[in-house]
Amino acid sequence: MWRRGAGGEGELMSRQLSDDQAHLWWADPAGFHDSVDLARYRHLLTEAERAKVDRFRFVRDRHTALMTRVLVRVVLSRYCDVAPREWRFHTNHYGRPEVAMPRCGVRFNLSHTAGLVVCLVSRGREVGVDAENLSREGAWLELAERFFAPTEAAAVRKTDESCRRRRFLEYWTLKESYIKARGMGLAIPLDGFSFDLNDGVSEGIEIRFAEAVCDDPVRWQFTLEPFSTEHLVATAIECHQQRPVRLSRFEVTEPLIAEALG
Image 1: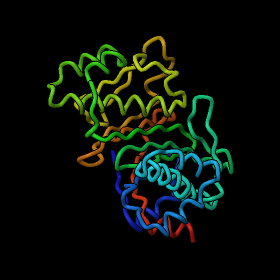
Image 2: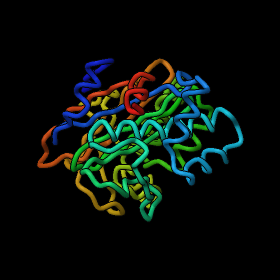
Image 3: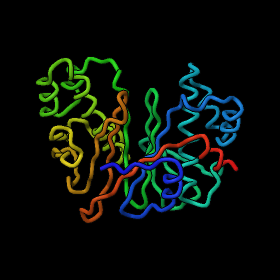
Image 4: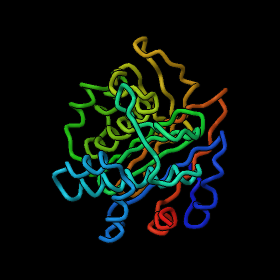
């Protein structure tokens, strides 16, 4: 399902985002640490965005928040003739970030976790992405039984305890990607839809809806992939006329940001 791009190939292909493609851009925030560059990156943000970044208590969280906002600006400018600092964003009624201006037909969704920031982009179709760090701790079975659909909770319960965290996070990332693609967040009940993982093979992932959620399973395409030994990433991509969407991923690097800044 993934097509991988790196270096010049990723930069060359990025503007060629056709209707049957989606691109997933990623960065490790720890890879950006030069103080001079970080000061320049801050100037890409609006005053309100800088204030939000500065509200985080811990340095690591402020750094991740900064790089998340830089990433989306630099990535969107790969597809539109707009300088990274010129983008303006707003949130919809449910809190999903969206482009306010200038309009250029590109849609995006963001996610970040410890050690990873991702931005999924498309043209003319809804997209959602979620990233999770596999070292997260939690009461996985309790959470599954509280929030998941019965079939999903049963699958987590049946999973050996040593593998339970990963199975929970597989369901969780998929659910997050779907509700983010819908742009409604937790207004959609997490137990109102369920996934059949089919042994975790992306091409076999199926979604089912209860009466509480009005949607059509054939409208969506999902991927679930280990991004590294530490991360799991799920995507939800709207399909038009059941035509599959090609998904590629590219890394955001310091040279790419430097190029964007000019």
